[in-house]
Amino acid sequence: MDSDLLDIAEVAARSGLAPSALRFYEKKGLIVPAGRNGLRRSYAPEVVTRLALISCARRAGFTIAEIERVLRATPGDTALRERLSAKAREVDEDIARLIRMRDALDHAATCDHALLVDCPEFTSMLRVPVAA
Image (tube, rainbow, N blue to C red; front, side):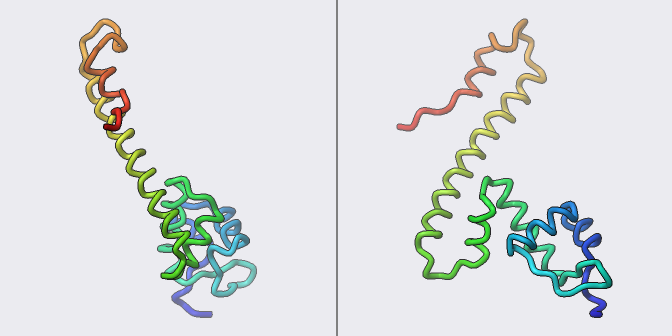
């Protein structure tokens, strides 16, 4: 057994994912074990980086099928690259929305209006900007 390999518990601890998630990702073909140590799966250390990518993509709203396509993408996969560009725009919109929410919450923490919803500054921060 290669001493550089990580068992499933180590990968789970390093990635912050449950072992059941690792087994699920393996079943879906997103990760591949390097072998077994007895009954326990073992993985190359690089799987932790791959899992970080998978976790980030999941938080960004990618489906398992989309992540599988990203992991197998080639330079000639123009349809996927167009989808990735569209997803980047969606993420930009999410970031803008979250920044507005953060700013509104920061203001709300110190606002002295009797009712927070009556504060024009607070409510203006939450409004979605109209595209020109």
